[in-house]
Image 1 (cartoon, one colour):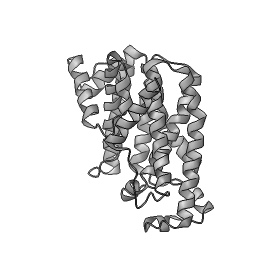
Image 2 (spheres, helix red, strand yellow):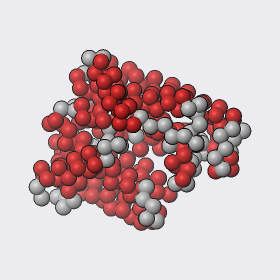
Image 3 (cartoon, one colour):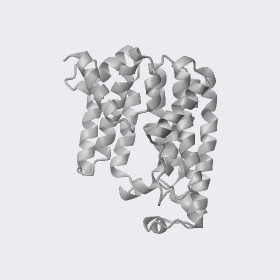
Image 4 (cartoon, one colour):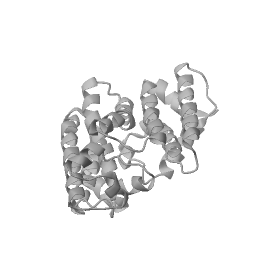
Length: 282
């Protein structure tokens, strides 16, 4: 199998999902960008499986387990005939990424395939440990940064990004039967699943989402220091991610936390404006 063609395949997957592909990743030097494409193609493939309407939970788990076995083959330095995993294998060896980071992502995708509700806020933090934090680690690895302190700071930001995505997508997830607002937090505000299922945005719901947004801002702030340890394009990549997450929270506040009837979106114009703001700080 041709390695260049394998990376090109990953690139097509990444750029073919422009709306979801991290626009800041284009700030990476070209020689490193192919590794980001391989990482994204892997995550995109697993995400598509977990979110599929056409697959049963059992079928999803089977396909995700097959991806896990292919990761084992990478660990054993075996050759793979799958273009994504062929490129990913080269990325792992060249960059020096622990395969466990990819396995952690699969833990979250498996969870998505069968779990619909969460009881405690800490369960969301644990979910983010597998769904979001590995992405930050992978980006740091590609950038040649392997400091545990940087990983911890990155975890705060990635967890906050995951939470911001939850609050942004309440209406979307509800249609898929997923509820990421913890039941224990609902109870604090006299809200419940039954009200959520009938799309009731009463004052208790507004107060609940405001509380969750404020809590997410606080988690973001705990990772802001990471910028001080980054240089060059990596600093701008971080600013893009951080500011993008904060914009989502700002927009949720702007619609008065009515995330059931409205869904905030940065959009293409917003992404361009975001990049301009980032470069204005150069």
